[in-house]
Length: 131
Image (tube, rainbow, N blue to C red; front, side, top):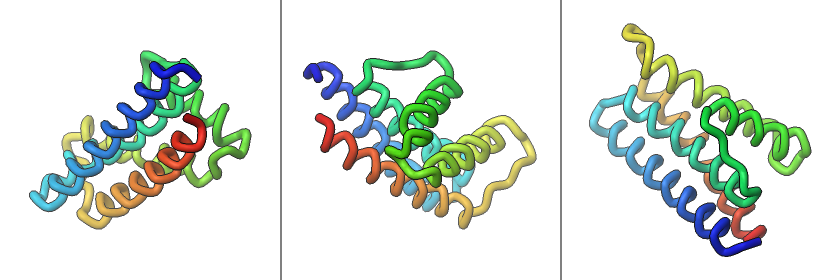
């Protein structure tokens, strides 16, 4: 594995951590829609971190998640529960960002942040082992 891929994977993990921290701050400020957005992006950056190791990237979020699911969840590298985390985070983020009348609760956002942290920890361990 070349150093450029490793550096990119680590950078994307840092971005994921920043998003999780932002989600916590936004939650405390009462901006649950913003927190849902940031928790989704934490998961998204985690997936892109793994893709960096493979030298892959996609222009659309759906391409990133489809590749991750195919190469890392269906193969058993990551448990199927991570697919559920991706879907739920994406759905809540989409509803929060695009549905004017969608209401996300603090408890929903806190669950999203916990899921993002779990996803982050699993991806971080994988990157550490494979760099």
